[in-house]
Amino acid sequence: MRARTVLPIGIVVLTACTDLPPATAPAHEAPSFSSGASHVEDTFFATAMCAPAIGYNIRFGGPRVLVRHVTGTRDTTFMFRTHAFQGWRLPETVFDGTTVDFSVRGGAEMFNIKRAEDGTLEVRIHEGTLIFQSISGDDMVIARHVIRTVPGQSVTMNQWNCRLQP
Image 1 (cartoon, rainbow, N blue to C red):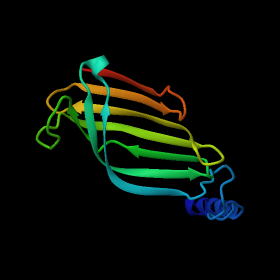
Image 2: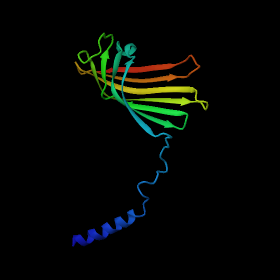
Image 3: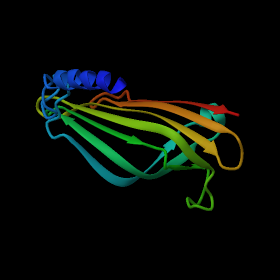
């Protein structure tokens, strides 16, 4: 009968599972964050510098949940998703729900801050991708960017790569 074949297989599986470490055992390769991850809800606004590529810039923003990871005393990483953001084609004089030009369909932002042993800022990197969907048409703007700041140096990278996707 089938019931007899199922029972021995179930016993073998249960016996094999007893050799596993308990669920609370630490993973061997897991990253160690000195203060763990913290979540902060706030509002964020910035401007996608797309004018050289598509003829206009896009101011964007909205509510976000910022996730902060601190590794030791020298590195901090901030990440957030942008799917609840809205966008406004610039120039625009009023930023409210009646003048919204884009909804942000997707994307994510990441900031990484590195510090020297004495705590002074060494480098700050900000990277992200935003996908803007036109509210009045089928056009989409894909905006990728890298912003790098190195204190004490006059060179700061602020590179935007935008393209219009009909």
